[in-house]
Length: 625
Image 1: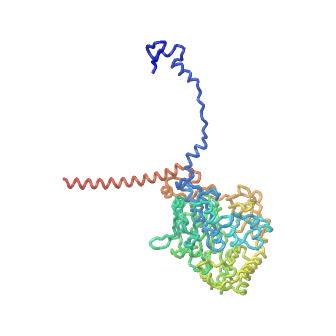
Image 2: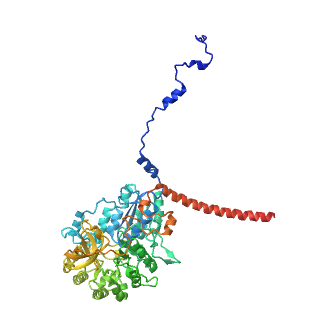
Image 3: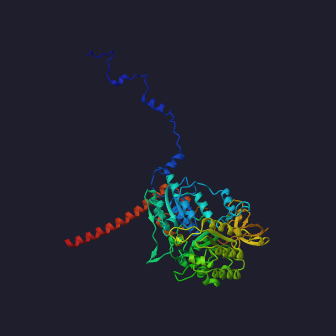
């Protein structure tokens, strides 16, 4: 290897740096003039990433839930309670089914069409006006759509309960579609409660009608991928209770209307009824609990209360009281300007209290309205139905109330084509309608429900049932119940918006529907109007000039979607004072609730451990001494 050589000998390596080279301090000074380029940060995106966990997260309490309810007002009340509990816990209740992570379907088992649409895969067809027109052309109507009758007679006012159930399920959607869209599913209501072994329910989470206070647990486990079934009955010392507590959080569909279930189940054993299989025998809530619920509702701005159950007339028979006693207690707490509406009652149980019921229905803060289903005007058919009354009993109730409560509205139900119904039986029913000209008439074609005695009877041919339904509907549409009221001055309570959004919907003293102009100041108020037009199911009123808009002596209503009824006990169970959906949008807070719960459990465990250790130490010390 050649030897290295250089021309100049270096005494020190530092000599290699010449005087022309920059000094370290010069290089440091130059850096001060370098301006670093800051990377722009998407703050909004970062915040979303911090607040929202990954899309595949299974942390309960952060998902979006879509709730759909069909059926009676009792079922609607259950749906409101389930929505309130889920929202209070942190779940987001959405009205968009596609955006939801889980669907909670609260079902109805009254008729075959409802359950068929719940079970089968169907198209997502909305109930457009064209659908309603087509159904209306067949001559059906339904009192339930009380916000619909703002259309002209050439369009649609109301339809039959058969068809509104169908339209509801068409708009909604069944478990099959939910599974196709990879949605988590929880089934509630009377269908799974009455028939839990149905094939299409297998593998799905189910919550019974008496277990709605545990909906959060069921939803949590379902989101984790588990299948849960809670179908038991609530009992106290062996006695069946009315159901879930009344002080649970709820989200009212209409913040101005509170639906209170006064009892569940009934005392009858009607041969056609499937609801009995789901709701069971009569179980009433105590009067003080019902009164407390009413008070709380008025404090939250409610101006109208609906009392509901499978049979309100039977209330209290299992706990040593009765319906009139409850009503008088409730009347004491109803503020001036608010109203109470009584739900359906069967003839046998109202007969015992006719005098007292007439007095209650004459009270200025109680609607002079009663729904008394007759089902048929043939005693032979009523006997086959096991209705426990005859047509004379129904007539006695209606005639007495019409005499003692002038102007009272009587609504009734009729089933067309019940097994064994002859042409003569049907003609007796037609004559009853022609005689009383009921302003609210629910016409139902008979459907045999599986598992009921009526399903095993010899059936009336389908074409005969359809024809009788059409014939009775034609009779119903042959008279106008409100024409004589044109020119009257009435005081009405405004509670909602009409189906076509052109009017506000109000009700007068007799719970007759009155459409009024959409003045924002009217909502939730008592308004004086002059009736200038009438239709089959409604009247139209013009506000009286310079008339005072009466504000009920109650608090400001909750916002739509706001959770009501958050008790101290519920807050302590759930970990914080959540009062509305807007306060439930932080994933970190939800995790905090769980961690806090775990810490509390851990603290208890440590305390018990320390106590045991101290006890053992004392024993050993005593032995050695």
